[in-house]
Each structure stands twice: as structure tokens, then as C-alpha cells.
Length: 314
Length: 300
Image (cartoon, rainbow over all chains, first blue to last red; front, side, top):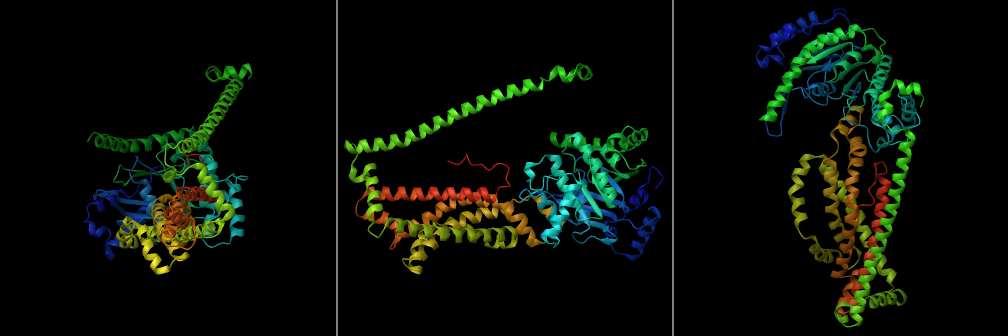
């Protein structure tokens, strides 16, 4: 885990790109074994990855009936307890990646594995913090946080007790009987965090969770997230369009290409932990990392910007 | 604010007014605003009452001076007399309160059954695309039919008593509630559904804890109109054939060429409908108290 640039398996990706489509998702034994071999050689030593995406494609039908490819030959691995960020230009398929890992959406081709098993549905060990408010507006804070345990069959008393504990951990004590519309955006995010973390997920997926918050609240929330994460030992996949946020939080940053997205590069962030998000940005090492990743990301942002301009002009 | 901190943050002091100045300007503005709002409300109240009183007075005077024929148009004093007579001496079918109670019973029963069926069908069809596609054309067809004509068939089926009126009210209420419930279920926020699924909710829990609460504002919006429809069903049912009820009173008044009687029964019906409307609004505020600001002022 020492090298700054930990390559994603570029040569494997190139090789696979020239293979006929049928063989990518085929169950040909020798081929599968061969691919496993390649991956084993590329992946770092240690325990099996918590999340593994191999040659994943995702196509959607647009309302006009055209097929739209969101993800193209995506390969990604997340280690146990690792905090990973996924950055990329707007609309490139970052959220789709999370939907595949969570089991909300199946891949069109390729393999998505979680805890060493293919994803077939929603795993109870996965938590998901959505970009927009997804707390239930008709439940008060206590019932919102207690929703997970209640859905999973716990009785009301125990669920509420657990929820009170989590409400305290995210600093919302005293707001138990408030409804979401009575809270600020930052407080609603805290509710969403508690709602997710109360289920003790081993994987936490976060889809631009703080993008709607003002800068100060955001820094505060990022620090709290790091504290909660380090206590939980869960793996995190954090989708964001903000490279600074990605570097400040993560162990590793994946850069996606402009849609259809595939991994352009994976970068190890070797900044020491525990981190203070507000201060780490002033470290010289932070800037070095930022410059290297930004060089990579910039090209993709330009591509996507040019495309958007053309589609508006058309 | 000390000189030192002002020197440190010059732009803050230069551009922002001091807090006290802001506060006083604010309170001044809000005072003026409340005052003008109160003035406006008083004016509206006066105009409202004036409009009603003026209309009744014009009607009464026109009848007194024989500008309009009392035989056809009745007159307010006659209507008041008629109501007083019903209250004190009862109607041709029995005491007035009994007629009101009968009509209300029919309307409320029809309303409750219609709402229950509408919500159940709306949720089931909204949740299940295949069922919705199969039933869709039939429901649309049934809805496009003028359903009041069903009253005749219901009287043949259920007789002159309670049953036929309740059935008519149910049919009228059902469609209003059904379409709203269906739409409400279809409009549930995708994110909330995804969140509930991730948190571990079973399909049944999703229905009871996400879909129904979310569709509730749609359903409740339909209750305002649907109680009116329940009353229509009850009254029209009585009109077509009954032994008791406000609808029968109207029919009787019509047959005896008594316009005052028709208007008097109408006034009583209007009062009942307004009371029911207030009840639905109270229910709405109770059931969806979580909503940011329950709009109570927009309805007319």
C-alpha cells in the first residue's frame, strides 16, 4: 500500500477491450481462471477485497428507446476498512456504480462481488447515504433513525434505545421529536448518517452526501464522518465531484472517465490519519497529490464539458 | 463592537449595518406588515358579510315589491320561515333532525366505504403495473360513465332504504379517491423507496411505511371533494326514491311547487357540507402534521 500510484490493471483492461463481448461475461472456465490469475497478480497482498467489480457494463434504455451506456468495462476493488472516493465529470456514471454495488441495479454485463459473493439483491451489510434527502418526511428524527432496526424486525423499545444512542453520536440530542422539515440541511444529513450507520454496515456507499451543504457545515460533517468511519471499520465508497473532498477523506481515489465511464486511474492517498479535513488541505503533500490527480481528471472534465456544449448547440 | 475587531474585518463593518439597526428596521417593518394585514382582513370580512346580506336583502326586496315572482323564486323570509317550521313542527316525513341524520348516515357510510375501496384499489393498482394495465381500461370506462344513472339500478337491487343511497355514494366517492391514491402511489419519491429497501424494509413494510404515508397527502386532498360527492350520492338516491331524508324533502317541495322548501333544504345541505369540510380539514391537519406548512388559507 506504499506506492503513490497503485495501478488499476490497465493492461488487463486493454486486453479485455479487444475481446469479443460474449467472452467478457462468459463462464468459460479457462478464461475465468486466467482472469483470476491476472487479477490476483495485480491486487495487493492481504485479505480478499470487500467490493470487486470486474468488467462491468451498465446500459440503460433512454425514454426515447435508445440504449445508453453508462459504464464501460469498469474494474474496481475496495479493501476491507478502506475509504475510497470516486471522482469524475458530472453525469459520468458515478452514482450508477454505487447502485450496482448496493444491488439496487443489476449490471448489464460483468461481475459485481461483495464480500466475495456475487451481488444478487440488497445486502443487509450495506448502507447507502443518498445525494438528495432520503429521510422519511413523515417520521420524526427518532423514528427515522430507528427505521432500519424496525424494518429488520427489532421491537420498538430496543430500536428507539439504539436510535437515541446514534442520535447522540451524530450530535442531534434534543431533536428526537422534530420532523425533517424542521431541521437544517446539515442536520438532515446527520439524521441520514445515523439512519445508515445504526445498521452497522460493513460497506457504506455515499453518493455526494454533502454536496448540498455550505462549506463550513460540510467540513464539520466530513470530520464527523471520518470519526464515525474509523470507529466502524467499514469500507466506504464515497462518490463526489469535489477532488479536494475526495483526497481529504480517502485512502484511495478512483478517477472515472467521461461517460461511458471506466476507471482512468487509481491513486493512493498517503496522508497520515487521523486527519482534520480543514487542515490537511494545507499540507504540501496534499497539493502534490491534488496536482497529479487533477491532471488526470481535467482531461475528462474537458471532454464532458465539450460534449455538453455540443449537445446544447445541437 | 470593539475598534480592534473592526480593524481586523473592515469589510464586515463597512458593508453590513449593525445588528441593532437591522433589528429595529425589521421590527418596524413587521409591525407595519401585521397592521396592514389586519386592516386587510377586517376589510375582507366586512365585504364578505356585506355581499351575503346585500344579496339576501335584494332578493327579499325584489320579492316584496313583486319584481320577481315569489311563486317561482321564493323569498329569504319565506325560506327562514320554512326552516323554522321544520325545526319546530317537523317535516312531512317526520322531525327535521331525523331527515338530516338519515342523509348524513347514508353519506358518511358511503364516504367511508368508498374511501376504503378507493385507497385499497389505488394502492394495489399503483403498486402492481400488470394489474393496473389489465384493470385500467375498465376503470377508465366506468369513470367516464355518468354514474348517477346507477341510482336507478341500485334502487331495484337494494330497495328504497339505506342500501341504495349508500351504494350510489360509494360509487361516486370511489373514483375520486381511487385516482388520487393511484397517482399518489405512482409519485412516491424513488429515493425514499431505495432508502427503505437498503434499510431492510420488506415489500409490505414499504407499502405501509413509505407508500401509504407518501400518498396520504394526495388521498386526503381527494377527501375534500369526495365528501361532497357522498352527499350528492345520498341526496340523489333519496330523490329517486326514499322514505326519509333531505333529498326526499327537496323532491316533496318540488312536487308541491314550494320553492322556499327547496331552498331551505338546500341551505341545510350546505350547512351540513360545510361542517363535514371542517371535519376533513381537521383530519388532514392531524394525519399530515409532518408536512412543512399545512395550507389552510387557500381553500375557498
